[in-house]
Length: 126
Length: 445
Image 1 (cartoon, chains in turn purple, cyan):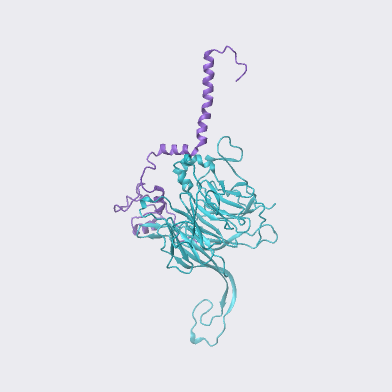
Image 2 (tube, chains in turn green, red; image 1 turned 30 degrees about the vertical axis):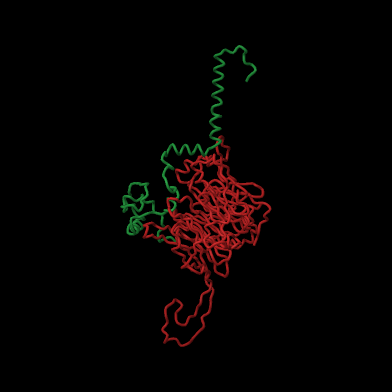
């Protein structure tokens, strides 16, 4: 603190100075929390955006998604038609559907996830 | 074979050559691998193609410049398939290529997609037989009754033709997706690993394989981890390691039992429970594990770091190198755009004194284990002229950004360098940036 503070600082001036001090310390305190765990801060952000994440029981969703990789089709006819048409226009796609289709019911084309843009090279690829 | 002095690692690199492709998507490079001599470099791509580059003879007028790599052979290794039982497509993307040690004039490599491994023979043909008795030079059959004299066909030189033919197809042994293949030091067997199982094959036998690791739980609801990578020890033919999505590495000895579900060694770095978060397990997942050439160490790559382990010490790694620690405060968005699941590979140099791995924004990182120095370089179109020097890059994590630094927020997360390879002896590296291949050599002043 400056040595030139007048001895007779009024109570009000003192209060203002204290408030200023308190405010100047605030960002330091916040930064310390972030510095000690950026990961936890990120986790809090994620939980705020997706409150239902991580609450499903059983095996992890990531693992299950990993084990079932690859585009699912209704049947082989659907697959072959998709391959034949991929060079030209896109088929009318189903609404983007995030839920997985399991063996519980017979899937219909509407249940299947939206088709990814086809990336299989044409037979012309040398 | 020219061997660089390994007393100092070159932190200065320059472009040797670059190979770029015009077609997008299908040409995304998915694996890069030098052969045992380093004269051949194989790349596999998302369209199921394999392209092999061969190093040219060194230019006598420029004795210090190494030979460039030019295309030697291109072939379609895998085609897209359809699994009728599950109604799932099987991608033709080449997940891994591994060379076999050369035993004769031909070259052999194993290439694999999610389900099928193929052994390819690449051979050269530079002679052609001429003067057949029963057919003309253009192949038309001659009328045998018109032939009045016999002659011996003679071999004439022809333009070099490189042929690739599939010699073995190892199929139907994996229910889940193959992530690794590794040739054994006995040169007779190899392993293939999928998410839950590891199989042992003999190179000559395609209708049988032995299951050596099975971590599939009886009830799939109890599934907690998957196998992410596996590799045979470079010298001990009975030892292999496999890594998991939980950040652990298990070393197994095939002499101890037929089914290696029980590990011989278990490598895991103890975690501070107070720092655990939702992301902890995801970022600890090991995307690649590689033995050192000496066989004494191994290296594991998780999302943010590379760890070097001493095989004799299971309790903690010998070294931990931060690849892009500045991403720790971006994990939320990296989770949302799925980048947190990216699988980066890592590699050793020939003398095990340096390691390399990729990052985002077409950056890749190199760590010198002896001098403890590290450098960030970029594989970009701008600096891709031959002999152009690579300027070291720096990422600014926060606060004031200095000139030439790049801020974390302006990194391009679509430009990821997942696959890199280091020449087995020389200071030459291959870096795959999406559908471009960059080959760099150390800069000699």
